[in-house]
Length: 322
Image 1: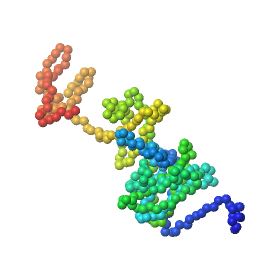
Image 2: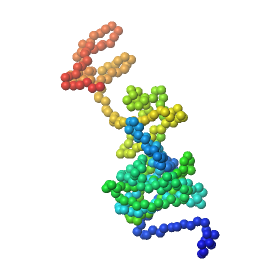
Image 3: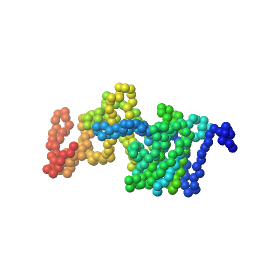
Image 4: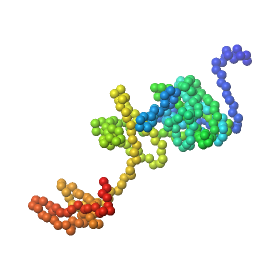
C-alpha cells in the first residue's frame, strides 16, 4: 500500500511492543472510586516547600486526599528494566471522555507500609512531569530499578492518580495498571485505607486552648483503640469563612492509661441524705469501719452517734500521694 493511500484511509496508528517470553508481566484492574479517588499530589511542582514547619516543630501537611489513591508495591531482585502502563477504559465501551491522569513511582524502605507523605528526593519517576499530562487513554513510561539504594534494601510504590480539579464525581472510573519487567519482580496491591470523619466545634464550654492551658481538658476528645501496630494519619481541618483563617489550630495525641481497679472499699455508715461513705483507709492494719467498735461515742440531743477520732497519721517511711 502506498503511503498516500494509507494516509487517506487511516487516521490513527498503534505501535505495539512484543515482549520476550522471559519478561515478567502483570496486569491489574483497579478503580478510583469514593475514598480511593484521591486526586493529584498538591504543590508537587510549587517552588515553596511542600510541608511548612512552624515554631513548635509540627509539620503542616497539605495532602489530605492523595494518599488514599490505590497503591502498588513493586520489588526487584537486581537491576531491572521496567515498563509501566496506566490505561483508562475505551471511550466506545465506557462512553465517558478520557481525562488527564498521572502516576508516581516512589522509593521506600519499608515493605509493609503505605505511602502517607513523600519526600521529593524519593520520587523516582513522575509519568506526567510538571502537570503536563494530556488526555491520552494510555500513559506509558520506561525506567530502570535497583533492589538497593545507598547500600540499603528498597522497594517501590506506584501511585496512579487523576489530574482533574474540582470534579470528584468525574474522577471516579476504573483503570488498568500493566507492568512489564526484564527480570523477575513482585507486584502487590496494598490494602486500602480506612477513613472515619468526625465533625465538632469549639464552643463556650469546649474551647480549652492549646496544651498547657489550665482549661485544655475542656477541648473535644476522641478515644482511639487499635488492636495491632497501625499507621494512623490524623487531619484537622477548619471549616468556615474568612473569620477563621487567622485562628491557628492544633491537636495533641496522648497515651490513654488502661482502666485501673479501685481499692476494695468498706461501708462505714450513712451520711447526710442517706449517702453512704465508703473508705479503703486502714488504721493500724484495720479499716476504719472495724475501729468503730473500739471508739467512744457520745449522744447529743437531736443527733446520731458521732465517733470521736483523730485522722490516721502516716508512718515515717510512708508518703502521702495525691
